[in-house]
Picture 1: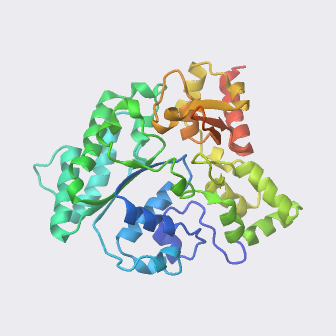
Picture 2: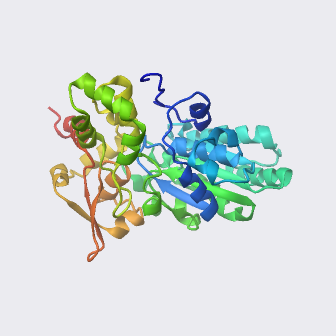
Length: 382
């Protein structure tokens, strides 16, 4: 908090954020564009980048909670505020050590929906329960259903060293469950999935080829994260306070924040985005630290690099990668670079039109030095 301003550190509920007076960087124009121009979407972003808050905002919008959006951009755009049945599934509820934990997570999410929309005793598999719920909600309300799935790929990450070796049972269950989103299309008003990657080669997404992937769409490059314009427009008091605390000028402080937390690019040529988690924690604590890394680096990624004996110093130079390696999200057993991009350790620095190649690099100092410090004890046993 600064001078009565409440910073939404760790707040992932849009309703909580708005009703309790937390500072909100207005992303609602994106919400309106999504809702009025398409239907099934996928968005890939690194962890701690605001995906959960985005889904919570979509949930409030489709529930017709007009009062929560007063004073925001969407208030001047939306005129109808229709309430739809909303299915908000959070796949972060388990650690996914095996297929049993996947069933537990799906059961947890489905039981919450069944408490509202009912259940038939003959419905056994997660996929059948999910499809039946969609049909019942549509029948009971006369309105199509909105489905929001947060971190759809969490069960695929698990503790595996090799992402190509994901438990076949997990793949089968997820394939059937997510396949409902295509077979039940006529009953769906809007679908939005978030995650790190599509994992094209583990077949889960083979039945979801109708999803519009906006992960690299320049129109949505700023949907998560904080741009420099948003930083100076929304956080000027916090920047000044931090500058005073650290004995710097306003411009010097901006430069330091940029060097540490800016630099993520989610389209060929787009404005850089700051990591929102690190920025908010910096303003809350008045200290410059590697907050994103304090939440933990995925263990599978560290082990993968070690097992491949990957040449980490090569990342200091521009890393060139064919466009299809990112747009198709194919995790290769011998090339971790696409996954390093998807998980946020590398970002787009430039694009070569002639060769159709992305040039990748570390987004900022927090990622670069945090990443190297994480790998150091793994690569050097003694």
